[in-house]
Image (cartoon, rainbow, N blue to C red; front, side, top):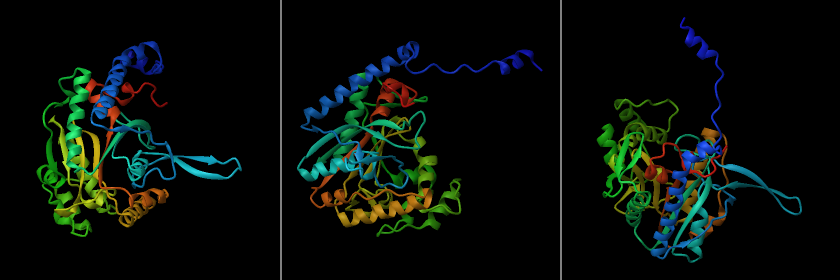
Length: 358
């Protein structure tokens, strides 16, 4: 046995220094100062376009009703000692839509949001979500907004390219626009829309067979959504936003619980995601404003959550009431920390957060 190797195995591991240690803070500070500059530039950009900055309350009756989003719960106690469960929101979306119903027309929120079961180089349990909404405008306008914000962040940080894990994207180039169906055909040889009916119902067997042929594992208890998600993660996402940003649009209607159907094809929704360097940055919708349909979709999502995780979140009845008064609108949610990461070349989300979550 190599004696030096043995000595190395016996040597106690040195714990990493805390984020607040002067040496680590010195390394992180350039990223943080760049974050501040990008924050100011983003606020100015929206201000120049007659947006009003809003601040959604963090505590909510419902944190969101998507099956695979996980919230932090807490308990509110009244002065009379009555107790009620509240949640830290996973997005300011529900509050923003109520403000649109109240009469606001262009709003944005640099919101602190919380998502449980999320931790990694690109994930933090607490992070900043940039959300903005436009009433009376087509959702394609949000695609132009996303392209402008990418360029703005890079310019403010003094970056000529966005980078992450060896991948690069030109933030000043016009993003590629590709539909989900086109992407799956290109990267996996899958005919997605052959498995989606006009009423939104899906063909699990058909998609599963195509997924297996593409080399993607399919479990016996998988749903159509499970297979779709695995195809997207394994075959499509790694190829997006390379060289220039990608706008992946027209998601199947079953994968867009808060979006309205595309008028030209009810099988797909007015939903897109923005990618750069293989990283998902934004998720945008032409917003659904039909309360009964929104309730139906929420119930489907919560049934799936109960099946997979054994829990469900309440439906925000106040939101459904507001949707009836809400004008036609479009909205986008962009992971602000990730945007700063790509613009500054940071490799982990905690490098661009002033005080990372313990």
